[in-house]
Image (cartoon, rainbow, N blue to C red; front, side, top):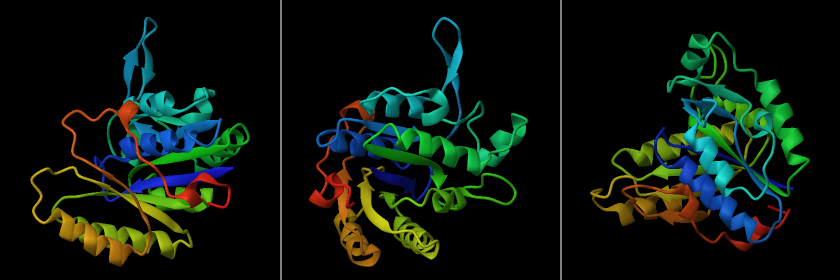
Length: 229
């Protein structure tokens, strides 16, 4: 079973778009491919019953080839679009990493490949004592870093890569997300990131005025299509 944890240099850098692209790419080689949004903060009522749903979760479900129980592909759903620790406090609950790990294990048993999208950046707070880095470490998955290409991204990317490796996790690759269409010297920035991150560039996502995860498409390097990944 192939699995990876997707994190970003910040929030709003295209993690969901990248995760959907990974799912579509893996689906070319594997029958049962499922996305997981471990923690979603921000939900709106949908459908006749007004059930709460998060747009990132819905996007990953649309990019998956299998439907699973909501408790597995989105074990933590918080109403307010805030940092997870604050959203959890306002909802009167606490984010429990062990519960998420159990959900992932149950999900992985039903899939050939799972893409887990993290919340915010790598060290986003989940509680007063834990962050997204603790969740990634508990899942023990290779990490894919989405770099939002804009001024300041080089430092953010280098710091995040160092933090990932400090947790003993492999940086399996990175994805360039062109969030700022007016960024100067974007190619020079990518060249520096190629050298500094010491991990394969999996995709270069162009700027999109209205990004649609359903149409996110890219081709992964061969090692990504086999369990050896």
